[in-house]
Amino acid sequence: MRKKIAVLWAGRLEQQPSDEAFAFQSSISVDQRLALDDIRGSRAHVAMLAKQGILDPADVATLDSELSRIAGELESGALIIDEDAEDIHSFIEGILTSRLGDVGKMVHAGRSRNDQVATDFRLYLKRVLPVLRLEISKTINALLDQAEKHTETIMPGYTHLQRAQPVTLAFHLVAWCAALERDMSRFHDAVERLDECPLGAGALAGSGLALDRNFTAEELNFRNPTLNAMDSVADRDFAVECASACALTQTHLSRFCEDIILWASAEFAFIDLDERWSTGSSIMPQKKNPDFAELIRGKTGRVNGNLMCLLTLLKGIPYAYDKDLQEDKEALFDSLDTVSQSLRMFRELVATATFNKDRMEGACRGGFLEATDVAEYLVKKGLPFRTAHEIAAAVVRDCLHAGQRQIIVCSLPELQSRCALFEPDIYEALTPAACVSARKLLGGTAPDEVKRQIAVLRGKN
Ligand code: ARG
Image (cartoon, rainbow, N blue to C red; front, side, top):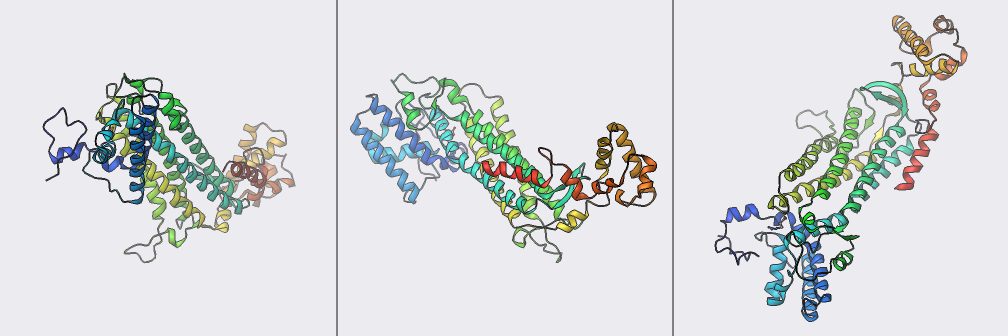
């Protein structure tokens, strides 16, 4: 039988829910990670109550040192969080009251758990999102380390998963980094917008006590207090924005992993995953499977689901606070945890992989990846692009009829039978390396240009 819990609302209700029902509505298993943020919020709140003359400075000194002691005990493990408590806010207030008696009971003046939890959640996000951004940044750097080694490594670039034009491996890796760079900025934006302090909003309408919301906002390092008390306790836009940024980051990782899984197949054989980042099969002795990449791809389902969970949670709830909102944290915490873990796994997987340069470059031959370059050659000689495209297509067809897989093996008279503008210099344009180095425009795949792109990203990470 559960011991009778000292709930914060015991004064109103004589009966308590059954054990199972109480556990159903408890959130402590999820929100205990807000413990230190909660204590920080309470310390700012009581300091403000003292400044405003609402609490006696001596009592506030007692409250503050006890709160600080509780924080220390939680960190050292001396104080164990009671999993039977209703939530982390009740737990901490309960400890305070059990240790300080009436003085402990003063902490909640002018406050509700509604503004308290909104404040704690934002404090937590302001603390962990920079860490997540660092994980992304480290991942970008790991990709750039590989990119630097492979600015001359030629591979096919794909559209429709059909070989399209030669690119470099560095170029492909930098494409991934560009997506991660946008993820970084999305988390940055999220922090910018959530950097407002809900404390003082009370249950929904503010407080009749003379609270100084500017003081607590400043004390907690928020840019400013929130504008409207009702919005402050009803709003979870910040959670949706963070969940959305997580979903997109994880979706990016999933796409990168899809490339890696393809590259690791015997059919591609572009990449060799380190044995530590592969797994075997319980039955097929020959297998070396890209399980880690698959799992990162698989976890995208959860992270995208968490975003849907939050949007669905919010869509029907009336203003202002409803207990439904308690479900917000589990979804977002799971997304944040999954994305950080996936980033760490992904970057080790990439850092330890080796690339099969010969296979990659070999795959650029035989698929007419140089056909666009033939058309561009003719454009440089003055032909309209559409005509040049038709001629290059005719050359491809000629090759196929002759059983040839590369334009470079055509003789000059054969080429000239399609267009008199072909001259011997056409052969210089047809190797994969020439196709790559021709694309030296801004954003292109030519080695020097990709080195510039790498330098831009290094400057930011
Ligand atoms: N555990 C609650 C949550 O996470 C705290 C707020 C409870 N407020 C209330 N009025 N029951 O949302």
